[in-house]
Image (cartoon, rainbow, N blue to C red; front, side):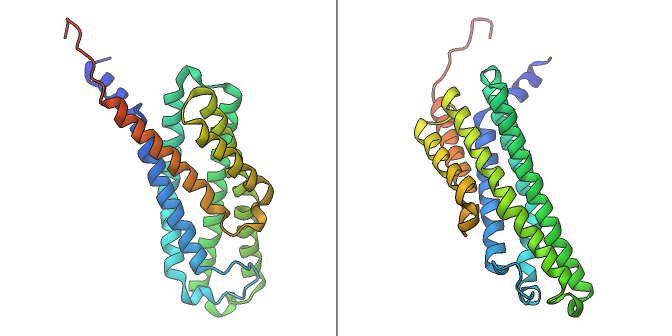
Amino acid sequence: MSHTQIITRDRLKTPKAAALAGIIFSVLLAAIFWLLRMSIPANPLEPGAWLAANSSPVALALNLVPFAGISFLWFIGVLRDRLGPREDRFFATVFVGSGLLFLAMLFAAAAIIGAILRVFADEPTEMLDSATLHFARALAYNIMNVYAIKMAGVFMFSTSTVAIYTGLAPRWIAVLGYALALILLVGSYYLTWGFAVMPLWVLLISIHILIDNYRASGVTVAPSAGE
């Protein structure tokens, strides 16, 4: 392996990559949830007046979903690479599996809402207050508010455990992650703000990693005699 390839790989493994990916994911996911929350009524049986009034911000939110997913995958990958041999296989499986399940459900719900917009654009009159609209809305609602948010809680719980055993983040962040994950697992169905928990917690971890990385980069290492 050439010297250039080694430098490139070292740069990809830096905590800064995970921090930046986590920050991008948090900002995008918060923007997506805010746009959807402001545009689509919480009641899944609403007749569909939002389709005519708020289709543009909903379409914008759906277009941001793939970019949030890419950032989240990058965040998981760089974190695992940073852990290296310290990674526990059991918690790594739960950590990666819950993250991928959350992402898959996010994409599934976005695809359903996107299908509603597409059908409404072709048949606006037939779509309003139809059984198809109510079914699709209820399906997307259940995917996100029952299943995806539970997987977000499992992801936070497993990540907090990994953080405690490996020193990835301070203990207080991990304890906070346990508390918030428990809230999502038990009471997410009754919390309208539940989706804000995961991106804010990931943002907190990412900011800590970024600050920690800049502190470590201030320590200079003397070059060897051969350099």
